[in-house]
Length: 239
Image 1 (cartoon, rainbow, N blue to C red):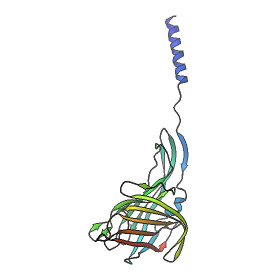
Image 2: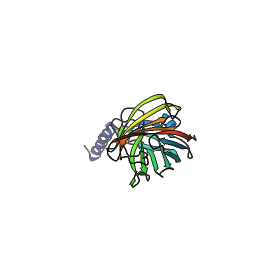
Image 3: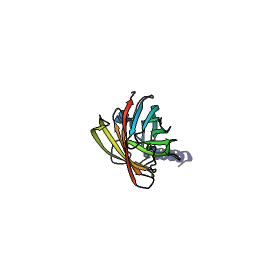
């Protein structure tokens, strides 16, 4: 066989090998993942405010929404590709000047058992825990979809409790309620009496209103259990 024929033969074999090679699988396209019904609990326009009353100290805590928005992120890996919505907002307490910097987490397209869900992580900055101590901390107040999977980072643990048709808070009936239990909540709005850090709390959210009640169980200066509520008594909702 001539050199030319050998080269041609080798070239043909090479082409066959390349054509027979299995193509790399394309990532699964999940399309667009929306925040869904979570928007009805989280999205309000700046200027919205809420007034809460403490059941033990009777003090008032007004929180003002200073910014709130939704953006769209893009995620791609060898396994899957999609775009998804994210929410973020800033609230400020007029009582102790605490800032609640809150945002939904990213979605990882590489996880084995992918679940199109996210947690709403809150970082409390400034404010106080007692006269001489900072009230800064972190926790998760909300996640979606509403399921029993839970969320946490080794410090706090958050669990979805249930959905309720309605509850009454300070004489007003609210509808479409979801609640979350938080173990070692680092972002609780501390009252003007001593309450130890990392309380165990339940947050109640009403569709169209946001947080309407926080049930707190903590410890006083003598390490005795102390319980109290922050209940919504007034508000201005801007949608």
